[in-house]
Length: 327
Ligand code: F6P
Image (cartoon, rainbow, N blue to C red):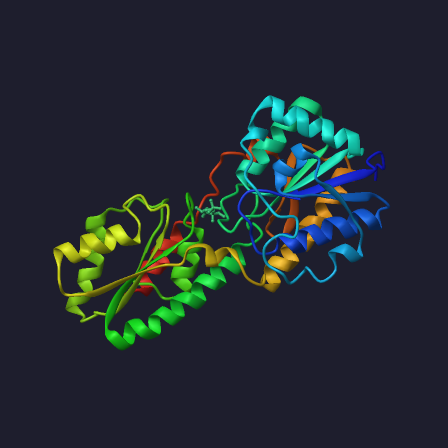
C-alpha cells in the first residue's frame, strides 16, 4: 500500500442516513490503524469552506456505531457549487495539511467532490450514504435498510388500525426520485398497491386495482407511494379516489423524516464498516475520483463519472411480484 497520504479528511454531506456514524468510525479507525491522521470536517462542504476541522482519535468515535444521524453534522452548500467556494475549501484543506478526502453522502456530494478533484487533484473517494438507495454502482447505500425497516414497522402498525376500521390508507414514504423504499416496504408490508416513480402507471390503473377489491369486498387496504410518484403524492391520489367513489373510508399517512433517523440495523452497520475500511485502503492503493460500493457482496470502486447522475435501476419484476401477492 502506498503511504504518501498522511492526513485524511472525512465528512458527511446531503441528507443524513442511519449508519453514517458507523462509516465515520470505520474510516477513522482504519486510518489510525494504518498510521494516518484523520480529521473530521463538520457540516459537509460548509465546514470545509470555513476550515471547521477536528482531529479524531480511535476513542473519539467510540459509542457512535449504534447511533443514527451523523456526529459530524451535515449540510447542503450552495457556496461549494461555485469555483470560488471550492478554492476557499481547498485552501483550508491545504492549511491543515489534509491530503485526501472521504465523503459520505449521495449524488450531490459526489458531484461536488468530483469537481474539487478535477480542479485540485486531491485524492478523493465517496461512500454512498442515503436512505433512497438511488446510487448506481452499488447494490445498497448506507441507511436504506434501516429506513425501509422503519417504514415496514409503520406500515404494520397502520395495518392494525386500517383493519379494525375497514379503512383504505395511502402511505407516503421517502424517495424523491427513487421507489426503492416504497417497493421494498410495500412488499414487506403486504401493500395492495405500490406506486413508484420508475413505473409507468396511471391514476386510472391504480383506481382500477383498488376498486377490483370492491368485488372481493376488500374495503381495508394499504397503498404505499414513493414521494416522487409521477401521478401525485398520497394526499393527491387519496383526494382523487374519494372524488370518484364513497366506497372507501380513506386516510393518509406521510411518514416523512422519521425514516431518516433511528438506530441503524445490523445490515447498515456492517455495510458502513466494510465501506469505511475499503475507502481508506482504496485511497492508500491509489484509488481516487471514485465511489466505493458493494456489488454481489464484493467491494467495488466505480469512477464518479460512471455513477453520477445515473439511475440505480430497480428490478421491475418486484412490482410484478407485489401485484401477484396483493390479490
Ligand atoms: O435522504 C433522501 C431524502 O430523504 C429524499 O427522499 C427526500 O426527498 C429528501 O431527502 C428530503 O431531504 P431534506 O428534507 O433534507 O431536504
